[in-house]
Image (cartoon, rainbow, N blue to C red; front, side, top):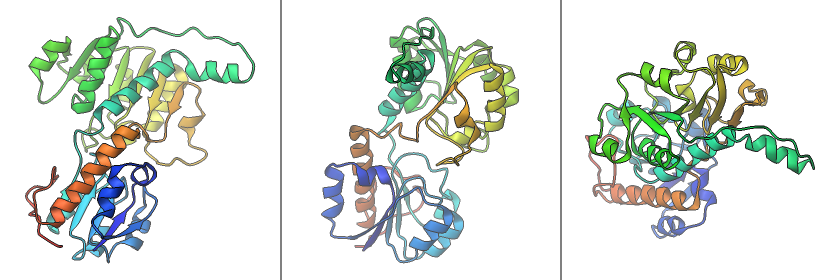
Length: 325
């Protein structure tokens, strides 16, 4: 059995997941992702299983990978880089790892928000340069946070926001009344209400045709002057060109993101040149605790599926798993 492993956080973080994978006795082929379509194409065709991160797994890739590829095990929860429809058509079980990184990503969202509102980078840069320059920041207390996407991560963000004494409004297709009552969340009637009322907006929605570039000139125009936006979802949820205009004008006072529409970005990526922007390199879930949870889950998924057993979580459960070992 040959297994392709491309996720770098899996490979770079020590933990029990390495022992679990090694104990299978399978041949492990390692590459440093995220891979482009061309790079992925060069590696598939003779592999039985694939532990992937955010590689471009297109229909073209899957056409070459089958029929040898029996299981695709995603490290993480976002499958927007994978052609799910083709996986299902070709009978390839697509596995993923929900419920393993929500606390870590929620913490990272607040790292970005606090860094922006307290001018953290400005102050640390000043003191490192033997200076003592100071800027006045803002409290989060009693400010209003709008959460777009009230899934596992969004709920963890809400819990932390309430601990900071913030007002929280959100909306969801499946509104959890008990959770909302427990933590004092208000249900918004529309996205426009969130845009109009919130001092901060935190994005935690999946990337779909409906959410792609949902934050654009039109939606930004409905937001409060001086709004701060945090994006720990996907870079493509935001129209980068429109956001840059709003950041330069001051309508959007700050943008904190762990994701971009180009990863890694080119050297001249314009968003990175703005002083009111903080970008981290898609590491919101990269903590030792979270990596071990995700990696262990995706290895267990792979082992179960290749042994013909029900995996922990499958994106396309209509595709049966078949014993291959």
